[in-house]
Length: 171
Image (cartoon, rainbow, N blue to C red; front, side, top):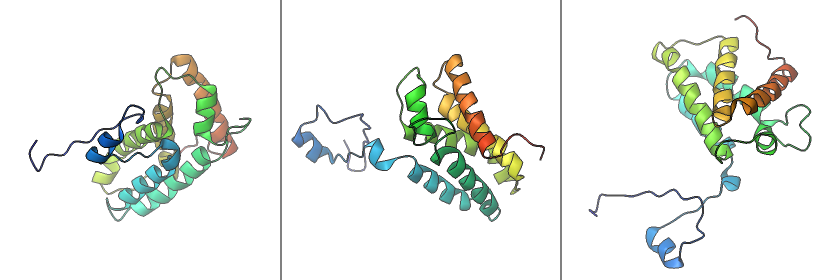
């Protein structure tokens, strides 16, 4: 391996790693529960500000939506602390995933969906941001779900939208 070559390994756990492997490879392990999804959203929103002068309004709207939709416990959710917790407790995905992957998927979909407005340096209406963010969240959270599980997710998210008075409105 050349001096300028770097390799990054992403592992699920370090169960089979010896202390020598860990020290030689310079492995740093951060569990998903230590990091969580909030720092990912915060850093994504900060990067949005760097895209142009018109992004401040966008960031404010999206930040408020993430706070209301994801951080709070969904209505009638029992012991679930937030939408991620409800997802884990109530839905069965076709492959295991964690909060970081779900939010990263949603943010990637959202960024791709907003690309045109960034290129044109235009600002969408609050309702348009809400609809695009809703669509991105549903695919980020529901992309690894079978159709019946997606229906359950949409039913719960509809309750979240209704509780926050975010039913679809023109504009």
